[in-house]
Amino acid sequence: MTAATREILRVTDLKTHFPVRSRGLIPRVIGQVKAVDGISLSLNSSETLGLVGESGSGKTTAARSILRLIRPTAGSIELDGTQIANLSQAALRPIRRKAQMIFQDPYNALNPRHTVGGIISAPFRIQGVEPPGGVKAAVQELMERVGLNPEHYNRYPNEFSGGQRQRIGVARAIALRPMLIVCDEPVSALDVSIQAQIINLLKDLQEEFGIAYLFVAHDLAVVRQISHRVAVMYLGHIVETAPRATIYSAPLHPYTHSLLSAVPVPDPKIQLKRERIVLQGDVPSPIDPPSGCVFRTRCFQAQERCAAEVPQLIEVAPDHKVACHFPITVAEVTARARAAGKIEVPETEVPAPPVSGPHFVEPGPPHA
Image (tube, rainbow, N blue to C red; front, side):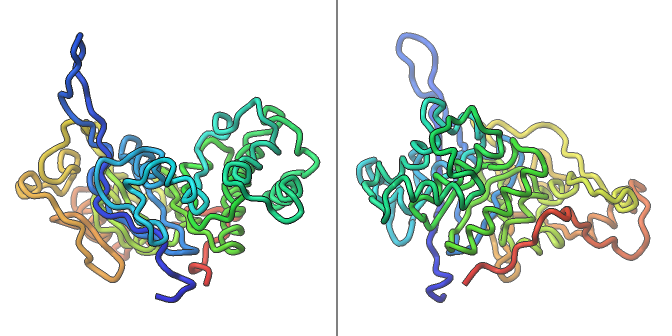
């Protein structure tokens, strides 16, 4: 591995459990909410890893645990060679310069009582950094870099739109030039046209500063635009990881198939030929997850083995890992649907439809 693409984050068997306490005069622990239950992932410099899954899968808890905004129950978090899983808050302070976060809600992520200049300058003040030319000049330069007017330095967040507020959050995150930024659904609260602007801004900043992103989202169309690799998460477990092109054209886990089938396609002819995999029931409770494979209660591939044995995340192809006893290809899913009479498709397979629009720019390889 070259210095330009060195590994900056390695997470091993990370668990974050929350105690469930009984009511009464003497509360006692009666269970555990297993929000994150043993995930492992890695991230290189200048790379974007998309973390996807439906609501309740544990994506946000995993992201916050990796940044130590939530203290994990067990596991290892190595950031730039430093083990941070068990560090105290005082010891974590200098580490914060290396890793920052962009939050989902641009309205609640900014203190309404502080000016934009005060919000973006907070990292300099907290870390005791005095940039050349002064803090104000550095903040105004950051504002201009993310597409804001530097003259609005003394304005308050309520004077800005949602997209502008998210740009303020981006400026605050990149102020100290971190090597890792965790993006917790940063565009889900924005209009589609504004989403494209923020995504393109993040990619430009990645190329300029070599930042690595852990991009948490439920919108697979957005994830496809920015990610180099994708990890699929379900009920606290990572069930499949692969490069972006592999996930979208040749997934193997039944859950990944179901997520991709829910992505709408703007071409009605292609949409009619696609099978919609509708999962039955809701996500099980993380307090009492199913035995064996946690996805088996909703899986169309489930067999007896799935209830008795936990599938391990195994590499089935270069950089493609899947945790499933009975993985299934796109061709097999289509053939099964054709045999069941659910869809009418020609014998030749329908190519994977694009989910991008003209306002997005496909990401290239990680910046060297």
